[in-house]
Image (cartoon, rainbow, N blue to C red; front, side, top):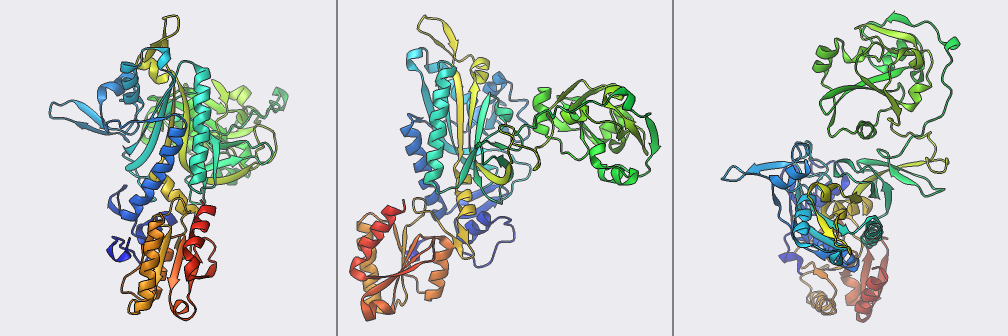
Length: 570
């Protein structure tokens, strides 16, 4: 296509609203425009890339025996009420009523509606396994939409759902999708790592996130170079250190000490001249509307995902300071586990502390020489903390590496969580009813586009992998007034187009420097410059965007060179 006819409103300056590189470059290159917070219009070049990613996804899903459907965005509340998720999904769900006052939502995900479809149509084991997928918009009312397409209120996603006769069948579907996802992200040119993750509100027994490695990633991951273990830090276990519990004859007398205006662990440790490792951090949460105390060593960070899983809570939130003060009679900073008639859950490490410091449940005071075995009423110990850099690999015990990642896909083993609540059954070979066993597999299509940019850019703009680029080649005639240059550029454009290559011809009446800047910003893999060397020697300059390499090629060999390059760099 001719650039003069394209709708590419490029920007020279970085937009003030953009925080990360993909957001900046997509705005500057004219790929997206903001409609409202977390909602974007895809401009022609941006939507072209979305379609290319979608086509890669379709090809890999179809190769894995997936069948494409298109499910409703507007979903009836009744289905969500059947699974119990209508009341627990939270404020992220966009809810609406029709003119008859019936409740609906804009689909944040589609487990309910796909299971309802299948339970009405599939009756026999002979119809299974079945893998159904769609690519469409999803809606989540993010509290703080940010980072452009990374965390929006409206986004494009592929979700596939598998239905099998048993767990063995689910294993096959899961492995098939795992491989298909690996194929998708390789073809998109991403450096990625599949990591163990927590299933969260989705439920299920097993899940992996596909993380694109990037400094801008919101998630932190750990991986082991020795045994290839990899996990999200929310999931990575911290094993029971199996230490020694302090003996009674080593326990010092519990002592109440005044600590005026000292509430944080850092301030308490400094005031009492102790190491943070010798203090206990007491945190108050509401788990399904019940208050609970969670204890971790003072130098550790509590992992809320692990706490929620240990408690088996549907909803877990940090308790409001006002509610804590009114119900527990103390400010948060002075709370402790001694003499408290409330559920107390503690991390493994707390069990092995001796003569430690805890809040005294009295403003301006702490206890020293507190001992869990003597002074605490802990209901249960478990893994409650975030993994840290000095922790060994939970699988082989070797050193762990930390990195940041962008979640571009996730695969779940749902089991019978949804088929049971929605009564999705089939008749087995003996004519007996059995629950379908399900899996769920999502790819953030729009997020993948942003992740590709986070890994492929330089100071001049985007560097698209060949298979994803909106156009493979841009032809830049340096002088629109020179008939010889223009005629060759036009002929080359026609020849490349007829050979099946996506080509842009920058025929704008602009200076060559402006065209070069825009070409680098947009990220065409190849730029062919037709200028003075063509007139003098019959040669053109080919610039390879990925490497910055410049090659001079005879005009009659350009088409074959481009074809060979694109074939070699698929």
